[in-house]
Length: 106
Ligand code: FES
Image (cartoon, rainbow, N blue to C red; front, top):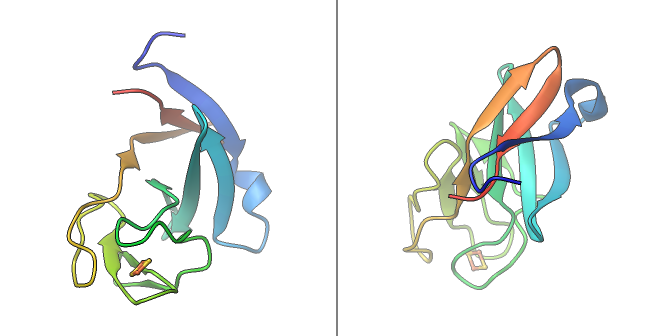
C-alpha cells in the first residue's frame, strides 16, 4: 500500500450506540470518535505516560486522559493542558457511503 493511501477501517454502523471504536492502523492503536456526525481518528496513547485514551471523556472537542487528566484536541492532537506537553498523533478521516476511511502513513 502507498504510504499515504486512505484505508477503509470501519463503518458508521459499527458505532451502534457508542461514540467510539478501537482499531489498528499499521500496528498503531487508534481510537475513532464520532462527535456531532464527524469522525475523528487519534492515536490511542497518551503522550504523558502511554495510558490508553480509550475510555476518556469527551468535552468541548477534546478527549481527557482517564489517568491524570491531560486533554487533547480531537482535531489537531494538541495537548491542551498538563501533565501532557506533546501532541498525540491524529489521522485524516473521510466518510463515504457510511464507510470510514483513514489516511495511514505520513
Ligand atoms: S497518562 Fe495521560 S495524563 Fe498521565
